[in-house]
Length: 308
Image (cartoon, rainbow, N blue to C red; front, side, top):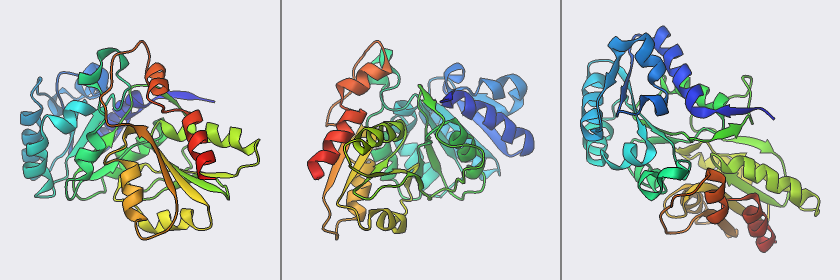
């Protein structure tokens, strides 16, 4: 299976759309070599703005650029992109519904070596709660490229969450992507697993193991956390015995919370795989942290079996 770098896919696609659309500009918080806006910096320095470690100011400048007709892509690590400039995002971008794209790189626990201060376990919850804000978590590099392009046609602010780790290719250039639409990657009759980001592949691994036990699992890639497509939630829930959600995020306020909110009037059992109410920590690898916090195929298997 092909393994790709989502950050690199993002950076190269951002440059590609900038070549096609003069409105596209990039702002970065002294992290362009990591967020991969370095491609824009090298080829289009006049449309790349190095803002330093000053995310609040960066978002305010992006708001001004948007008001002048530009489509600014604001870049930093997820924990800083969502947390540092919260008030500027709320008041200056979301309230006037501006076309600002906030890119949270190195999301979740993927910045393993830098520990809790650089790991975002609550960013989806923060951004999901802001009115007008769309929240998207690409599942692989190809979907990342499609998200960048689709964002140009979207009215209003978007938060795009990108992992630092390499991920397997689960979609291809022919796979349809639309903001607000889910993607069924595998059908099943007993349980539906709604997963996002790195946990989608874990869900597919769990499905394969469970199929050998005679358990049929449907796997849905939920790349758009907000707006959540309620009709599709109902469609993929119909007829199954239970639901599992899986995400590399706190169990509070993320995908699991969104699905529970959507299904609050339905009598169907739901289990959530995610980070408990705690911060991350330093580790040698991202995979070590996923194992420690129970973000594994085995955790999904255990939730499925508990429901049945």
